[in-house]
Image (tube, rainbow, N blue to C red; front, top):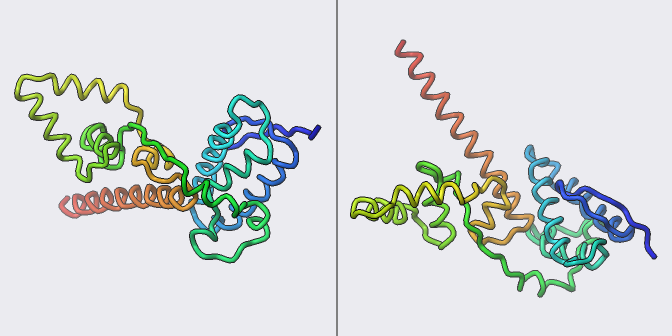
Length: 218
């Protein structure tokens, strides 16, 4: 019987056999080396670890201890940087990524989930979240539908408030990818995290610019 290690992966406690834990550690070390160049490396790695934990639990089913099959399943779905950037395999990834499971990764079904979209919100992000869920490019059509429903005697405002309460906000990169039904892999998690910080930076620049203009008027 293999020894068991207890790990915390993305905030989720998992029991993993020693060989599988070593395999996972090699993969994570490779991620640290690759994403360490990014100023948002910690946020990217945190979200990747959380998704790895979700995939391992998905593979484990009712089992209490994760094995090598579960770790390889999670790693294969997430992919590795060289798969996206045409990089040569590093030692860590060469040992951890099972390239024989490419069909499994390609056939993985990413299910959409309904979230409020904080990146395109007018009030609470309800309408933009619904449009993302149904693949509608512009949330203005959902907003117009709510307005029309309200002015024609419907309970549009009440409906909006209810949806605001029951729909969670897409806070993490994983939530935002799941909201749009996009693959939750290394490449997209990195993109979502970087885009989120770019939006915050742009907002800060606009606020600073407005403050500077007002100060000049004074």
